[in-house]
Image 1 (cartoon, rainbow, N blue to C red):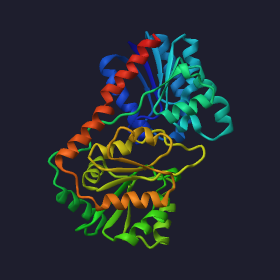
Image 2 (spheres, helix red, strand yellow):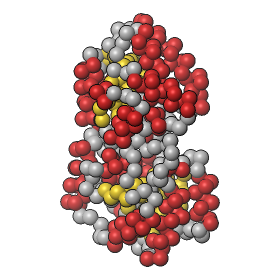
Image 3 (cartoon, rainbow, N blue to C red):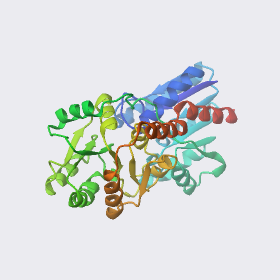
Image 4 (cartoon, rainbow, N blue to C red):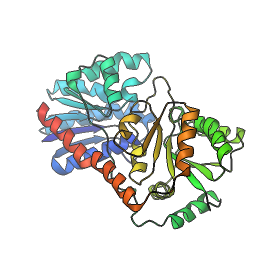
Length: 361
């Protein structure tokens, strides 16, 4: 199969959509004849990138034999008109914000473009529902959830040694301390500031033997930092900023609980929740908001706990209960890892993509 693969969210840029683009592209490229048109830089250059996409895609369509055009997200759905000119079927993946983005001009134009695709792949039930709300036919949509690569788990790990490395990073002793961990872009909907303000003080009333580490960068960094200072939590909450894959791996393998405390922000949705699965693949219990596409990521994970969005009591009770538990045995860990890796294996997921491509052709 000869595929024109177009994506504006691709490595070296970092993020969930970038991971999805890379994983699908790298596997399809091994099996099929894939012609890539990719962008891995800042979105602030999109005004230049889109014309580049049009020119390069047109050249490929004119000079190469192409069977099908694949678009990596909804914001580049206007490229479908190019596919129409060259009479090529088009498949597009919708994540969440690329269909829900709260801008009247965007909502006027983008859903109409998405409707013209031959197939719309949605990464969660939530995303599929949002597509249907915008008039995209149910018969055109299918849910294929995102996956993970087993790149984070450290076999035969020595927790003490891993924690020694974290101690050097945050300059505090972790002896007899539990670690709560969150990772993601520092934006409002991630709810990190809410968790620091509402839940951490409640947990401290019950116990003092924990710290909370936040990994990531973004425009909400100063808001979170101010929230930590206002609540005098500088010795409890630590912001590490953007970290290397090696450091993230250490954190996933030495933390005790992974927290994903997303809150509802109109027009800014969480399409899936890859970081929750990455943490789960390392045997971490995951406590997350029962919101949007996050619930799709956790429904098959036996140690995933969904909490009502913005429920201070719900988060406090579940996290407190998990802090009381002993670490799981090696047998329990491997069993839970097997569940995650079976249900969210990128090879299987890419195969589902390819089946949809075949159906269209």
